[in-house]
Image (cartoon, rainbow, N blue to C red; front, side, top):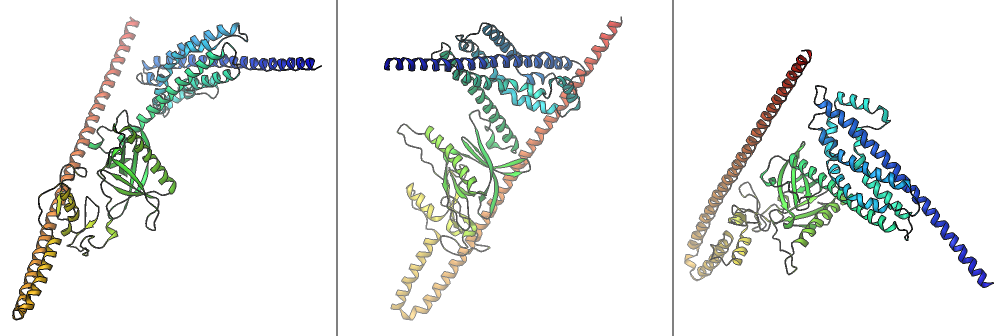
Length: 549
């Protein structure tokens, strides 16, 4: 009884297995049928596109009834002829293969042989966005729309755009159908391994096409951003093939006097910020991410959603309108910096050290010099140390020093404390006493005089008078020196403004010359077109005369 029961279970299991396999084979047959039927429809649509639409538009382009310019037709239709040839061959072989189709038939080898030729699709896919842009231009014209509507009345709701996008959609469709076919094929089937190979190949072709699309979109985005900027020398090499656009958006920049709205552009290697003006931008600074670091700031009463951007040449604080936007900016910038750091590690695995420009303390944060504590006035003006960012007076920042990471061309203003530290590091020769040091020296002299005066009481009053007179002379001399310094600073600032104005005038002149050149080129092109039209008309008249003769 036990043996009979075991035999019954084995037979039942076998029957169940056979039933499942039969169901799998039925589904496999349906998928193959779908591949064949969809390929027939696809090839027929390609024929309509090539033999009816493109062919007629090409013929009309040589006449005075042209719907589309002859130069634009190859851009709109790209290499659609090559795709038609490949898929016609694919359909013929599919028809031949499925004539004697059975459960042991192999379709994987067929796809493995043809898939390498499908790489031609990448050229079409790359050009598709450009094709759409030109098509949108013609869709604004009544003559084009009337001609298209007359051609597509028998194709239900389809239009030229829906035909042109079919090759872009076909490759992902192959991938889905092959995946479904693999799922409907049992692993011991002779076709299983071939199908798996074909699926991997078509997936790779699709990946290459998607990369091509992304590269083309990135290129168009870079060109768009470049054209939106007023011409600037820092953007000369902006259109680099290795540069990738990451994100863009507005943020508020904390400046020395007030908060300013700026528009920021992040790429995989650089960071730009600019002032928007209509559809154009005025560039303020380009920063290399290899020289940049991000520092998060906690919310305070005065500032929320803020973080610091620290760079070799310029550091500043920005804030966003929401915590989510702030986190997104920090994440995107930090990710790109991290990628650059990994690629720039030296042989020992150490990262390059970055010298950062200081974040300037806003003017509103202090009413007096942060070194001598004296209150700022009309004559005692505010300055910023380029090394530490403190707000200081002219007396406490009388020195200038070359700091190539801040300004590679000229010395910059730094406070006396930083000047002493930097000179000590470079073992520079002994420097003259600063105004602060001179003041300390005078106080010591005053104390010495008061001690001497105790010994000589008779000369006390006279010495005090002399001392007061000397102090007044010194104070007057200091005031005169400060006034001279302020005048020199004003002259330097005015000179800088004049130089900047000259540069702007030169750039405007270059733009005007460029525009004049473009206008002249357009006029020449228009003249050439008019000459071509006249020649065509003369040729037509001559042909008519010859025919009448």
